[in-house]
Image (cartoon, rainbow, N blue to C red; front, top):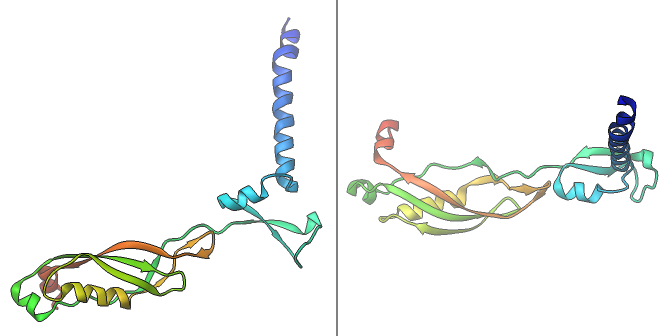
Amino acid sequence: MFATWFLQRVLPFTLTLLVGSLAGGASGLFGWSGASERAETGVLVFKERGRRGCRDRAARRWTRAKKSTPVVYTYEPNTRYTEEAMRRGVTGVVRLRVTFGAGGRIERVEPVLGLPYGLTEQAERVAWATRFTPASEHGVPITVTKEVDYVFSLSDRMKAGL
């Protein structure tokens, strides 16, 4: 009784699972399917050794695709208060929309939210002087636009001795 139940129910399921696993693993190993899909999703990619157009499967090897990375600041100068803004006690946030180019240069700076007495211009000066490593997508540098806040606070300046 147990033997017939096992042969009818468990054995076909186990064999199907085993054959499916082997077929899926073999197709991934030999590149029958999924090599281009994997390159788009950034999981694993075939990388050819030697010259272009190599047909030998043994010459291929698996490598991890490069992931996407954000913009990384390498240098950003300090903001400076203008004399008029300091005398009047102006504090607040200047928000700028900055376009970080794929070539490693700032391409565009435009104010979104500003402050009077030259503080917006000071924030723009800092944005233009910023150095950075560009963002990348799958290892390729890309242009990114994001909003950056510059905080002007007199209490922080007093503590820092500026």
